[in-house]
Amino acid sequence: MSEREVLELLRENARYSAADIARMTGLEEQEVEAVVEELEGAGVVRGYQAVVDWDKLEDERVRAEVELNVRLDRETGYGDIAERLARFPQVKALRLVSGDYDFDMEVEGDSIREVSQFISEKVAPVPEITQTVTHYVMTSYKENGIELGDGEDDDRLSFSP
Amino acid sequence: MTIEPSDRVKAVPPSGIRRFFEIAEERDEVISLGVGEPDFSTPWAARDAAITSLEQGKTSYTANRGKRELRESIADYVADRFDLGYDPAEEIIVTAGASEAVDLAFRAFVDPGDTVAIAQPSYISYEPGVIFAGGEVLPVPTRKEDEFRLTVEELDAAGAADADVLVVCYPNNPTGAIMREEDLEPIADFAREHDLTVFSDEIYAELTYDGDHTSIATVDGMRERTIVFNGFSKAHAMTGLRLGYALGPADAIGAMNKIHQYAMLSAPTTAQYAALEALDSCENDVREMVDQYDRRRQFVLSRFREIGMDVFEAKGAFYCFPEVPEGFTAEEFAEDVLREQGVAVVPGDVFGVGGEGHLRISYATGLEDLREALTRIEAFVAEHA
Ligand SMILES: Cc1ncc(COP(=O)(O)O)c(C=O)c1O
Image 1 (cartoon, protein in one colour):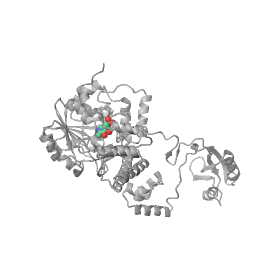
Image 2: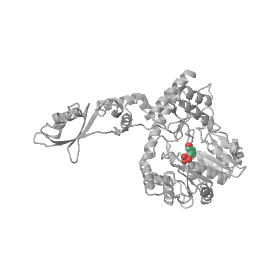
Image 3: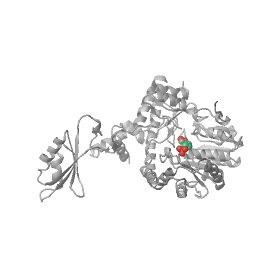
Image 4: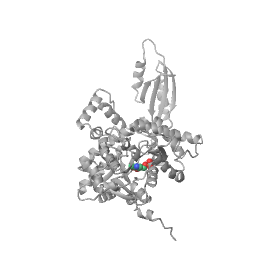
């Protein structure tokens, strides 16, 4: 139960300190630390990252969602293909999905050229991959549960009854 | 030539919040803990229902008392949540916010010269409402020692036995206090014994963090002398949609409707569609908001304790009510912490007797802001206290 609460809070904001979480949940600070350590140790919490709105930066950042279709043979399973693809640093997310295609892959690079090259030179040649469909991300409105764009100002009155 | 306001209007002093508002306007980057409204948006389903109703051109007046369907829905909801049984045909009126319901009640049941006892500290609109109706206000203090619950001793001491109406608000704005059944029973006895009509503002009823809300109208013999106010502003985060309601015996609601039908005709139609949906499908949204408020409540309470400010353990609404450190009045503290640290809080005096020396802190604000605001308050206290 407390694990779940702590996880929810960390997902909301990984920068909440153990003291913050303790205050919100009524747990002791040491208990929170222990729970977090346990979750990290057990591999439930795999890391902490910033949620970035790239559109707000000058630097170009190109992202693409790639649909992959694969053909399995007796020796190769989904896991083998996934392992090979996941190793590329350009691949930010990789999921086996149900539906019209097999894998759903998120790729990031500094330019369209770089991303296209990566897909045509590194991904498409993988022998089991029969088809790739690349969708370049044009605008992102929400990432990891956080809405992006112009955070609309809180124009509530600073005092109200 | 000036258009001279009525004596009643002149009798009401300017709002105690106004001056602070002006200071806050001058300063950049104010974090406000001064707001009495949710920082959440109205649940999407309710917004969608409002939009759809507009698309369908449902923009005419509704029945004076509100759409029949909505009154039925309210009847089911209050029965289910608070054990309150009211007939949608005659015992419920839908109003433009609980504010309108409160105003209607004062005008419908207070004659010039009548005395209205108000348990204080309390929401700031009751007093002016009484004065506009020509009544006289009798403040009845509640105290921290009693967890800001109203007691018969205070009612007696204030002379409330001779009053005509008693106004209570639990969960309370500004203290966050709640009253349980056993606390309400003696108040109900007092009201019956001295023939008081009770106005019970229960707009924060959903926002309780330690057991469910009990309405005084469910206490034996109270239904026939009580008007209950509620609305969608707080639990359903619908402040701007302006929708509330009152529950009471048929004659009483009929009297309120007499004013309402001339003053307002009917509550906003779009908002009524949103409210229908809110009751129909937004229970989970409400639960989620309540969970968030509870976390923030715990956070804020624990921070005040760390800062060393005495704070009452609020169990309802989204306010907490700490005491200012020695050497300050609440007004001074609120003004200085706003000027020096850019944190807006409301001095307790604004809410009437019993509020002196306290601050109302609203935690209807994101945790990040709460954390920063409390860090600033801590710095302020460290420097001055
Ligand atoms: C106790 C209390 N009653 C009524 C209201 C007004 O509610 P509404 O928006 O429904 O008019 C408020 C708003 O702050 C309140 O705190």
